Image 1 (cartoon, rainbow, N blue to C red):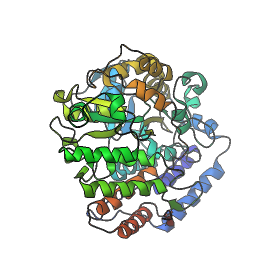
Image 2 (image 1 turned 60 degrees about the vertical axis):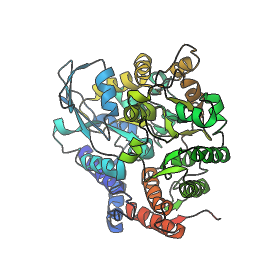
Image 3 (image 1 turned 90 degrees about the vertical axis):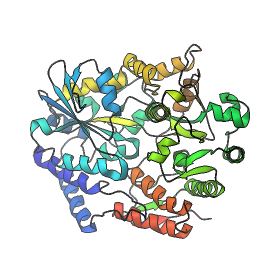
Image 4 (image 1 turned 30 degrees about the horizontal axis):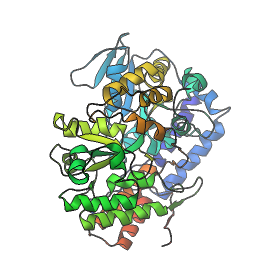
Length: 491
C-alpha cells in the first residue's frame, strides 16, 4: 500500500510541477500540459489521500530506513556541495571531478546538479521523484534542495514528499531553537510539521563600489552612501548624478531591483485555493521605474542576471555602481566576478527598502534509506552553531544562527577585507530578524521568471506595455494550466 500510495503522490507532484520555463518572446513559448492531464492527476491525488490513514508525520516514518550505501543529493548549483565537502565532519575525500564524495564510514555521496532557470531543476527532480518508489536503492534520492520560491510545493503535507524532521529524530523545538523564525515558518507544512531546514538566512542590502562612490559622491562611508539611496526618489536622483559622471547605477534593465519590489508586495501571486494570478501594484511600480531607468540610461541595459554581460559588470573595471544582494550574492557572485582586483573596493548599506532574496532549504526525501545520516547532515550543517560560524567567517555567508549573527554584528573587531574593513553583519542582522514569510506560494518561481521575461521585452522597446501584459498572461497560463486568469492593478 505504501509503495502504491507513493507512486500516485509522485505522479501528482510531476503534473503540478514547473515543467517548462517562461521564455521571452525572443526564445519561444513554454511547453504546457493539458487540462485533462491535470484533472486526471488531481483525481489520483484524491485517491492517494483517501488511502492514507493517520497524520503525515506518522505515515512518513514507515517510508524511511537506514543502511544505504549511497546518499544521493540533488541541487541546482554546487553551493551546498561546497559547504558539505568543506564543513561536514564526516567527509573523507572528494573525487577529482567533484561529482562524488566519500564519507569516513565508506558511504558514497553522489551529487546531481541541474540548472534552476526556467524550471529545469524542478522538471528533472520531479521526474526522479515520480520514480522514487521503484528506483534501485543506490539511485533513490535521499536529500534534495529547494529554493524559497518553490519550497512550499515540496513540503506540502498532502503530497508528502518531504519527511517531517521529527520523523528523522530532529526536535525543532530544541535542535532548531537558534534558527531564524522566518526560516522555520517557511519550512512548515500546512499540517504544522517542519519538513526542511536551511543553513542560511538571506536579508538583502545594497552592495556598492567604494571607488565610484568617492568619485561621484565624495565619500564611500556606508552611512553617508545610505543617504544617497535611502528611498526610491533619492535613489533615482543619485542615478542621474552617476550618469552625469559616466557611471551606471545598475547593470540590468530591471532584474537587479526586482527582488526588492517583489519582497515588499501586499499580497501573494496566487491566493490559497484560487486560480487567479494577482499582479501586485508594487510590481507595476517596478515596471515603471525599470522602463524609466532604461530610457534615461541609468542602467547598462543588460538583459538579465547570470549572463556573461551581467557578470562582467561586476568586474574590477566596470562602471556599474551598485547591486541588490543578500550575503550569498557577495561571496557566491561578486567575489568570483571581481577577483582579487576588487578586494576592498566594495561596501554595503541598507538601501531603499529592506527585503529578503532566496534561501536554500535541505529536504529529506520520502523513501530515503539513509535516514540517520540525513538527520546528521541536517543537524551538522544547518543547526550546529560552530560550523555555521565557520562558514560565515570563511565565506561571508549569512548563516542561520540568531545568536551567532547577533554576536558578529556587535563585534567591533570583526572586519571584512573584501568589504574594505566593514562589518556587514551590523546591517544584515537587524534586517534578518524582521523578515516574514507569509506570501510564498508554489507559483513564485514561475511567476517571477515569466513576469521578468515579459516585461524585459517592454524595457528594451520590443513590445508595448499592453503587449507585455498579454505575453505574461499567455506565458503563465502555459506554465500553469490550472491558473485561469490574471488580474492587474487599476491605474
